[in-house]
Structure formats: C-alpha cells, structure tokens
Length: 200
Image 1: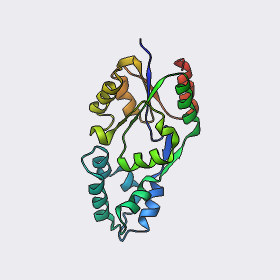
Image 2: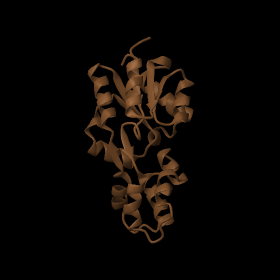
Image 3: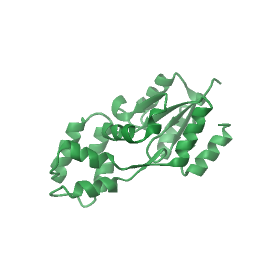
Image 4: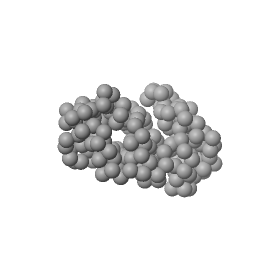
C-alpha cells in the first residue's frame, strides 16, 4: 500500500455549524419567515439544489426571498447565511499533526460557495490542504457515487489508500463500499483514538 491520504468532511468534523444562527438574523429581515426557518435553511430542497450546483447563488437567494419575504440584498443575506461556523480545536490539531507528519489531506464536503468563501476568509486552517472536493463544484453530493469518484481522480488514490472521516453514517458507508478506510466521527476524542489505531 502506498502512502495514504486523509479526506476530511468539513461541517461537524472540522467546524461546527448552526443554521439557527443564520435564521435569527434572516428572520428579522423577513416579512413571512417560515415557522422553522432554521430547518428550512438547513435542509430544504433549495439548499440541496444550491449545494449540488443546480441553483446558482443568485437563484438560491431569489428563491429564499420568494419563500420568506427577505427584504435585504444578496450581500446582507450571504453574511447571515454563512456566518454560522465555529472551529473544533482538537480536530484542527489532529489535522495539523497529520500535516507535520507529511500526510496529504483533502477537504471532501457537501457545501456551497457562500459557506466556502466565508470559511476561507475567516479560518486560516482551511488553506492547509492539498485539495478540495466541493459538492457544488462537482454537482454531486455524498453519498452519491460521482463525488467519491471526483476525490479518487483528484488524489490518484483508491481503496485503502484513502482514509475518510465524516460524521454521517451513510456517507461513511459509501466510502467503505469503495474499500476506503473510514472513521465515523462521533466526537473528537473518538476520532483521535481511531487515527492512533491506524498508526497516524
């Protein structure tokens, strides 16, 4: 087996997020906010469309405005929508330790361009990866096969040469089905211990 690479999911693994934070700001500028605005923002078909690249940023914004009566502009909305993240320090240290050992690391995330622009601007650790696979760019979301193929193509790795960590069981299962070595992230301590068991 050649030198492995490590693919990190982003949300809930390296950074936590809470759409309720966005909902509070957006709701204050809406004429008809849905009762569960945070759920609407975090799990609606509109978000899936945005994060699979079938909706542009502008189209997503316009659809949200139509659904909620949001009164502000795209820049204001984007500020509310993207500023929902906090770093998970022990996981950032885990990543830094892998880099110190010369292990190539990649971001492998279901996400959107507003979130990525914000994280890139506000979290210095984000610059320190060899590559990035984003669902909105490859037009496929985990656990669907095309996004996994995109990571294999980018890295030139297959099977057990890929170590993959994610907080969602269905995403992990799709990686394991390809022969990847997987870590189901439930807590930083559990994940750190799993990496130790892999000799990393």
